[in-house]
Image 1 (cartoon, rainbow, N blue to C red):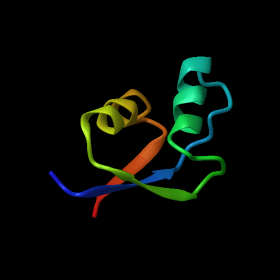
Image 2: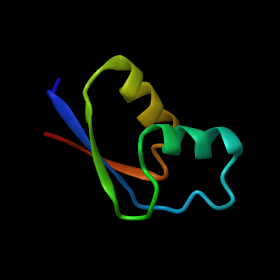
Image 3: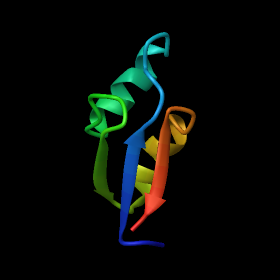
Image 4: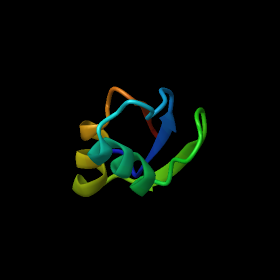
Length: 60
């Protein structure tokens, strides 16, 4: 596994279920095409997996 993940919001959360909106916000993503770097651990991987249709993930 990589040390960090670069997570980018590529699709809007408008129309998504509230749980997905909160997950995206918990990842630190506020606006489209903005990125955050998060540690590569099971918790973050689980969050990303839940909203994989809204984000793009790169291993750093």
